[in-house]
Image 1 (tube, rainbow, N blue to C red):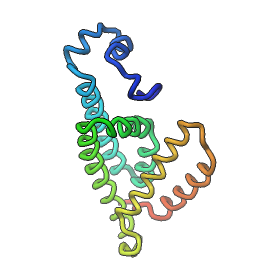
Image 2 (tube, rainbow, N blue to C red; image 1 turned 180 degrees about the horizontal axis):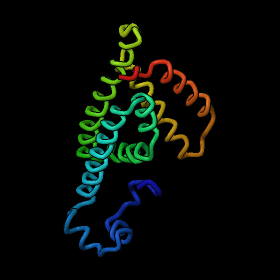
Image 3 (tube, rainbow, N blue to C red; image 1 turned 90 degrees about the vertical axis):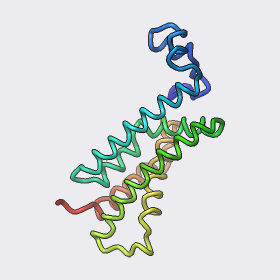
Image 4 (cartoon, rainbow, N blue to C red; image 1 turned 60 degrees about the vertical axis):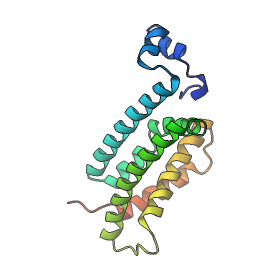
Length: 169
């Protein structure tokens, strides 16, 4: 999916990549949607585990930023493209995004509160969305070969993260 997009992912290609016969893929995944859902669920759980690890890091905001810039973000975007055509995929992504966003918002809330930031002026959910969205746009643009403003945007976010990182326990 990452190399050629979701439309290029067929049971024959999956079987060839896995070194098995297509019938075995169909045995475990009767439809490509079943396979897509299994991959999405496994990836989502893995990413939620990584998010929990990031939140336990000594610099959780930085760790979350890195997580949102990771390889998995590109795969999530490919699944989002697929979700435009598959209701079950869309529902799964909505559930995952809700869980991921709630945990991230909690970390941002703690950080803003620890630094005395006016949360009415800078709502944690909005700040979380801005940082996450920027990370995803950077991943998307990088995959297209676009780099204009990336270094500056990254430096800007990292300065903010340095300023508002949670104090050590």
